[in-house]
Length: 170
Image (cartoon, rainbow, N blue to C red; front, side, top):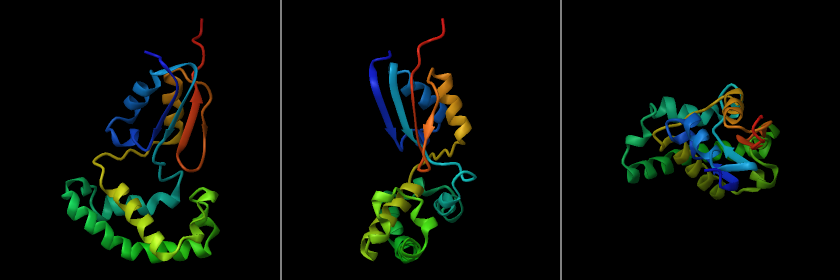
């Protein structure tokens, strides 16, 4: 049922347990000429700056953060934020490479330490809490778009991908 001219999925499909199936499902909602835009976690080989978040999830929490009671996980992420925030604050103050991991208009280098702490608590919780966390390669994402009838895929360094549905071949 292709009924929408625009569909946006921001940070959801990689948590479904079947990212490709999720892409097919939401892609099927887009009209001819319409646009599908998705934001997905990046593959670690394509985004080395994301590796620390993946390490926290996969190694430090053994990929089992979703089994920790939510209230306990909330307090655990607050404690881990006390360690991560000063490190990240320093990196964003001193490293162009660190600042390049977020959109320039976010101005992370201008965050105070308290704001960086809250940013890190949210980011850590988002990395650790979900049961599923797919990190597809760009070539896979492009093939999912193509399989669903979309044209060339545009993407950026943050995990955003978008394409327009093309007319079916006669």
